[in-house]
Amino acid sequence: MESLRERWRHIIFGTDTPAGQLFDVILIVTILASVVAVMLDSVASLHLDYGTWLYAAEWFFTILFTLEYGIRLWVSERPLRYARSFYGIVDLLSIIPTYLSLIVAGSNYLLTIRALRVLRVFRVMKLVKFMGEANQLGLALVRTRRKIAIFMFSVFVVIVIFGSVMYVVEGPKNGFTSIPRSIYWAIVTITTVGYGDISPHTPLGQLIASLAMITGYAIIAVPTGIVTAEISAARHSMQYERECTECHWHSHDPDARFCKQCGSKLPKLSLKGRE
Image 1 (spheres, rainbow, N blue to C red):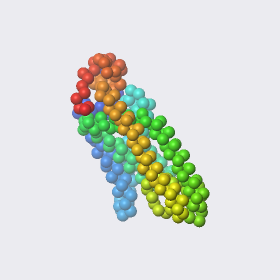
Image 2: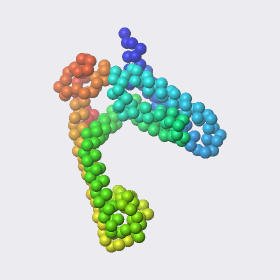
Image 3: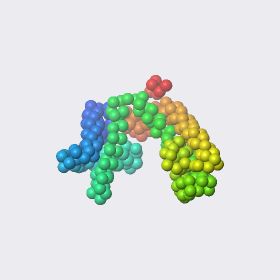
Image 4: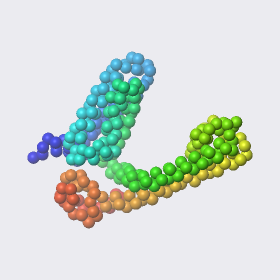
């Protein structure tokens, strides 16, 4: 017979039961209601007339989500793993702003981060294709984090060089009053934003600006290629992913017949829907 903790684990983390599906639907509706309440509170006229009610609603939702977060930690087989997961971090961040508003005024408007929790709708509605694509993207981003970090550092070095050169060429008389301000211009130029608040006036400066803009377009292709390659690799590896129907463990070998976590028999490997 299932214990109370196990029963709640299946309701909260599973969607294979009517109770679990109902819980997630109610949770998503509650999340949307809390986000709407925060947005309405930012409207001056509504805040003036209904500020007290909206403030009470904000605390009601926050206390409710705090209890939910505590229950998730309690029923989870690995509380620390859940706390460090994407949804665990989002769940925590969705309740912090209200408590932080007691110290820093206005921080409660950051509660709109709760909208990220609505991503659970893909799991609730069993949109497998969407979940598969989302998992592939997440896996690709995790695998490319070191490459992207090295790439970003290299871009930063290039930006510093462009900014320093432009400071020497244009100087304070043309708006490049310091190297940090010139670096700001280089960031705006390389990212192709181009605010226009600072612009080179000398022919040499304009040549350097042209090179910076061309460099910006060339830079865009680098992370795109890195992430695309990893998405392709993630798609190939996830073709062999299977979920245990008992403990919901995912990481199994392609030729595994039983779950390495609980020993239950695994469903047959099928590539249908992964193409």
